[in-house]
Structures are given as C-alpha cells and as structure tokens.
Amino acid sequence: MIDTHCHIFDEAFDADRSEAVARAQAAGVTLMLMPNVDSKTYGGMMRTANAFSQVCLPMVGVHPTSITAENVEHELDFVRGELERNPPQTFVAVGEIGVDCYWSRAHVAQQLVAFERQLRIAEQHGLPVVIHARDSLSEILETLRTAKPNVRGVFHAFSGSVEQYHSLRQLGDYKLGIGGMVTFRSAGQLLEVVRQTPLSDLLLETDAPYLTPTPHRGKRNESAYLPLVAQKIAEVKGLSIEEVAEVTTDNAVRLFNLQR
Image 1 (cartoon, one colour):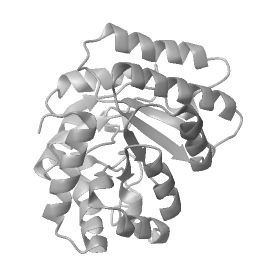
Image 2 (cartoon, rainbow, N blue to C red):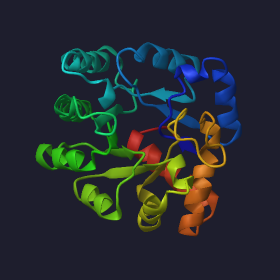
Image 3 (cartoon, helix red, strand yellow):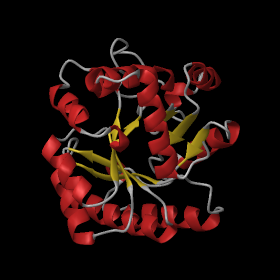
C-alpha cells in the first residue's frame, strides 16, 4: 500500500520517527508521500525525505491556512524557487494546496489567489496537485471551472457528496483521497461516496498525525494504520483488502509517476 498523504516530518514524530516508518513498512506500506505545509516546515520535510529516501517522498506547496495577505507572495516565490532549484524528480506533486473555510474566512481571497497560481506552477512543471478543500468545495470547483488548469490530482480527505464527486470528475483527472474519516460513525455520506466511486478513482491516505481511524481515535495517527482504511473500503465495496491495496497502489503509481 501507499500512504499518499502523511506528515511524518511533523514534530509529533520527533521522538520515534524511525520506529513509525518501520511500523508502517511492517504493516505493508511501501511509500509515504509527504505534502508540505509552508516555507517553515520545508526544512524538516526535506530532512525526513533524505533520511528515509526509499520510503518518504516530498511534495512542495503552501497549505491554505498558512496564507495571509502579508506572506502570500513570499510563499509563492518559495514554491517556485524550490521547483527551479531542485532536480525535476525531487518532488512527486505540488501540495498541499487549496482553500480552507473551516477555521476562518479572513484570508480566503488570498487563498484563492495562491491556489490558482500553484495550479499554474504545477501545470508548468508537469506535476500533479494535492488539493485541500475543507468547507470550500464550491470555491475549489469554481476555480477549476474558470481556470481550466491542465493538471491531474487528488482531493485530499474528500468530504463532499456523490454529486460533487461527479462535478469534479467532469473537470479533469482527479482522484479522491480516503483516510481515517471513512471509519468514523459519522461517515454516512463518505461511505456512500466510496460505494459509488470506482476503485480506480480512490487513493489511500492517513493525514498522519491527524484523522486517526477507529479504533485508535484520540491517539496520534500514523501510516501503520493505513490497512484499517483499506479494510473499510473493502467492506463497503464488497472487495478483498488485497484488491483494494493493489488497485489503489496502481492509482498512486500512475498519478504521482512513481516506481512500483
């Protein structure tokens, strides 16, 4: 399996990062893809990528909650600069980018600017995008409709409806990232989305250290829990966990241009 979205470089793993990577590998997780947060987290992410170069693969981008009116140009210059400074195969995607209306709408205008410009950066470099769309799917979809970027990508921690899934699929080659939320008691709508979405459009993710799946809720999440997500998807779709692992791994390999 491939964990397509985890923050193993987060300080929550400072005490046992090597052990967490080993547990993930023992659980059958062969790769852990790391979305960047902003220029301040970049150094730690790259140190993790260098320390575990066969397992932990980095992205570059700016998370929407890191965007303010004061820093938007600086953060976008940082993304462009790292892509130009590093060899072409350094990053597997531009991410995590998007819009977040959950915590605050104070900087939504700047978030939308940063989102569209990072879509263009990804387009320029031929990289997929990892999209954060918390309470902002309508804004994200409208941006994709108007900007028409020539990119492919994944909607991280998708929490929309079946109808919204169909809308985003009409806009391009976008997958759904499914993580621990699919195991929650409140996952009714997400379960229906998983049920109606072809397995070829799904990716596995943890968002570690966040969104810990049942039965570990309340504890730190880690990539070793990814099989719990795969098992739930298998139950919902009436498949074996082996088939879910095989197909979602193929999906990730193709989307992120990985070595199998």
